[in-house]
Image 1 (cartoon, helix red, strand yellow):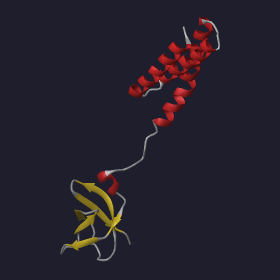
Image 2 (cartoon, one colour):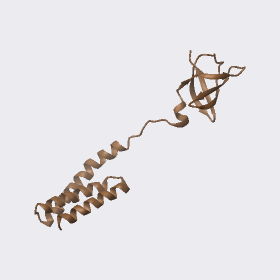
Image 3 (cartoon, rainbow, N blue to C red):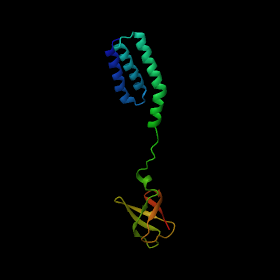
Image 4 (cartoon, rainbow, N blue to C red):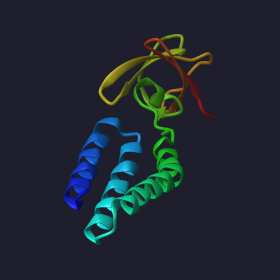
Length: 140
């Protein structure tokens, strides 16, 4: 096969990798590019196939697991309501029983409850979220 054919097939496999994202087509595509190099240098078809196979096998069993491992790391980012737990805020309205308050967080008004009476002027920490109510504790 000519080196142009090997190169075009390798590039097509890289384009296919965009849609699969499992890095197996990239390994084969690099093998095809090495086979194209072998064809360009004048080696025979059997050497081209051996080069393709060797590169594919080496990359598939060494580089691919390494890449997948590092891309599959779980991100420990909290978002939405989960991001509120553990944060400290000041409340702007307190009920008469001093166990219910209103807290404004990023423009949103939340109802807050506490098991113990709250003291004005001290920030509260969000312990958990139950529906649309924040369960808060005042730090001493």
